[in-house]
Amino acid sequence: MDKVRHSDRHTLTDLVSLLRYTVGVDDELVPFADRVRERYAAWLAQQEQSGTKFTETQRWWLDRMVEVIANSAGITAEDLDEAPFTERGGVDGALRDLGDQAADLLENLNAELTA
Image (cartoon, rainbow, N blue to C red; front, side, top):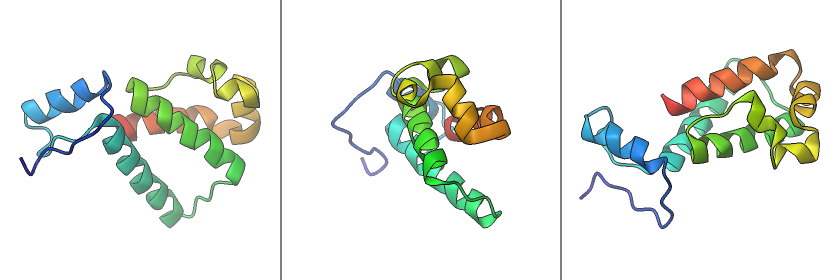
């Protein structure tokens, strides 16, 4: 089974990966969270290549958004009023730290990481 990656932690989102593999969308069965993190790394590299640099504070938000996506197969603005985001002000904190691009980043991460 060279096309199956093992994970000690299974989540409901792994069903997404199983379905994608079963219907032939993916040629390798990879835990959903691993796939999301791989896509995030590629997305960050693409952003950097296009000249977009994120501050440490912005990366805090992005990294945690990615973890929500990895565990829940998506993220909404309402999720930003839950832990761990509330420690930095929830939605208001995201708007403060990410600026006008906050909604676009949320939408972009959902689209790019769960595709």
